[in-house]
Structures are given as structure tokens and as C-alpha cells.
Image 1 (cartoon, helix red, strand yellow):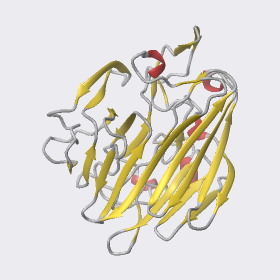
Image 2 (cartoon, one colour):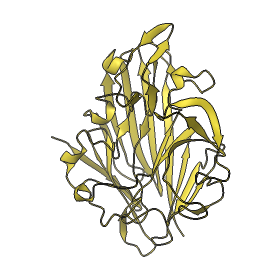
Image 3 (cartoon, one colour):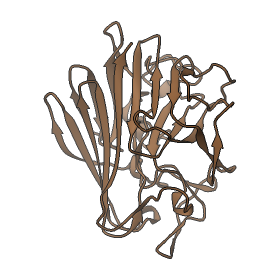
Image 4 (cartoon, rainbow, N blue to C red):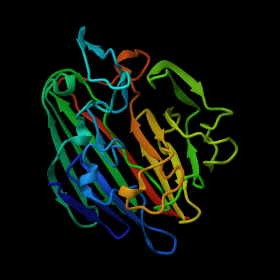
Length: 318
């Protein structure tokens, strides 16, 4: 039985569930004072079970992809579960599909909720007994998502949140204005595995260095790519003229996977109606397949070291 926990202040209400330490709803006000759930949500909690969209979930042990050959660490080979010639989001039973422990919940001016998950040595093929935490904190008009982790052996770790945002709470994100502070994305092969090279966004539909509507200037063909961040605070801004809500994304991570699914199963979703390109993800993380690329920032977590991934979402009205 999934358990639901809510924290709120005068500006934001956050509803979470222990399955996947998932964000179920993120509610803020539009310019007319109406509540808007700015993340895509399932109507029924049961639909979160093993959902292929990883809707709102905490993703691990390794967010993103690792090539089908696995990886080497300290000279030892580690083989991983693969599907479609890639290991995705931590494997067959990644952290998104586990029940996390609710550690603490606080109320008041800066409410927070903290979840934890214990991943045993060699779970999904990864070394080390690993304890991970995610803490959601509301401070005025900001939501901070803090991931932490420690292992009793050297391992690799790359965590992220997988919210799908729509600042109108329905419809499409094609009329949202978007800015991403990155001049490159990762080059990938036919299995979406990085080649180790960068690709310039200039003169492509990936180019959001200057704020523009998502469907303007270039024919929009959807995005499922890692932006190599030039600026982290903020790394992105997105704004809806319809609702007046602006969301500013900041993080301590080197990259953000931006993903815009063309369609979603509206029959299971509480946000209605949905249109073509109904949402956008900002998965703040280190790069996919990092254990196999010396030129990427390392995802290795040494025994006893402390891992952090901190992302802040700031909501303004314009």
C-alpha cells in the first residue's frame, strides 16, 4: 500500500508518495490566484507501479544510460541488465520502483520531508551497500530537491528526479517560453549512448540559449538529450504566458537531460486535457555512460564519501 505525505507553505503544496520517493503533485498559484498542479500526475497511485515514464520518481542507482557492456571499476568488470541495448535508469528494478522509508517530516515556515532507501551490495549489478536519501524542502516560492548517498565500497552513483512539468497544468508545453544555458548537447549513438563528443546546438531546434517559445524558429521534433551546462544558476527558465507562472531551475550538476514526450496516456493522467508535447523533464545529473568516458566528470563514489545532487525550482509570477 503506497503512503502519501504532504507538505505545504503559503505558496507551494507538495504531495509525495513513498513508492519511488515520488513527487505526485506540485501545486502553486497562477496569476489569478488559482491552484495549478505543474507536474503531470497519475489519477490512481497504483499506476505509479513500474510505470515506463518514471513519473515524478527518484531515479537510481544510475540515472540515464550505460552501454550494454556494463562498466569497469577498480579494474573489475560489472555487468548490468540491458534492454534495447542499453542499461536505463538503474536497471530492471531501479530505485524508482522501490518503496522508500519516510525518515522525517516537518511543518512550519520551511517544511520538509526526507526519504531513504538502502540498496544492498550487487543490487542490479552495482557494488557496495549504499544508503541514499532525498529531502524535499519548501522555502517561500522555492522547492529544493536534495539527493545524498554513502557507500561502504567504491561504486558509481548518479541520482535524479523525473518530474514532467507543464506550467498550465494541462494542454501542451509548445507555447511555453524556454531558455537553457548550454551551447552543447552530448553526441549519442543509435542507442542513445554518448560517444564522448559534444554537439553544438547552434542553428538547431535544440538551441534555447536565447529565450523563445518551444515551437518557434525551428521545426520542433522533440528533445531527449543531455545539455552540457555553461551556467548552473540558473541552468534553465521556463514560462507560460497563459498561467503567468515562471519556473527557474538551478543545480550543482554538470548536465540536464531535457525530455519532451510527444504523447502521454491521458486515460491514466489527472491533468486534462493533454495535447501534443504535453510536458517537459529537467533531469539534473551527471552524464550518461560516465563510467566509460574518462573525459566526463566522474560518477564514482568512493567508500565513505558523501554524494550530493541539489536542485532548486523557483516559481515566480509574471
